[in-house]
Length: 275
Image (cartoon, rainbow, N blue to C red):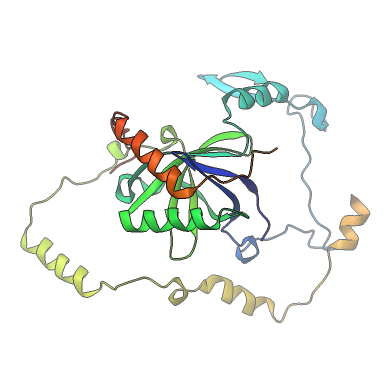
């Protein structure tokens, strides 16, 4: 796997050189190409102006953002780049903001999963962080600049690797206020019976391999007898870093612990989208 981001994860005086890797295997996702039924040539979309009914080149296309009821304002790409740069954290910095219980995060805010792995010199500190999170039953909420945008993320310890899950801004999550959800019921006989059923169907762990992608298997079986063709001839015809020195880990942990004790606790942030 190739890293999509490299930098340092820092908490207290600890700085660990790490890289991020996508945890999603895109080749396993069911995806289709659109082709012409007659000659199997790939279908491409062209960008047209709805007023002039002409194709528009990319250098004449600009982004527009909704600023009101059917009102838009244009924004140039260089303006967006400057805006992102002004809000971005230090390049290559993944700063831990706080450690929280896993249940305090709304899983609906999870956006995209990554693996976080140590680079040379960071193996020991990485292992210490992973084991400390496991022992404390905590995850780390961190901030980094990912694809030129400031991004909040959750560092989730696993048996081997620490996973990083990018988080959607809480403003993007809808509240379930207007949904036809019944009020909480008292512990009636039905609730007690449902609890017994939950206990009977409970297991120590969940193995996703027990539930394979049956749709993909069926699709492969369907395509096994189909004739094959290549798109390649048709497509061709149509076409800084920070210092890597690591200070003594134990000493840095002691100093960081002293700083954390003297720092006032921040009030817990409002959890968005909680049902």
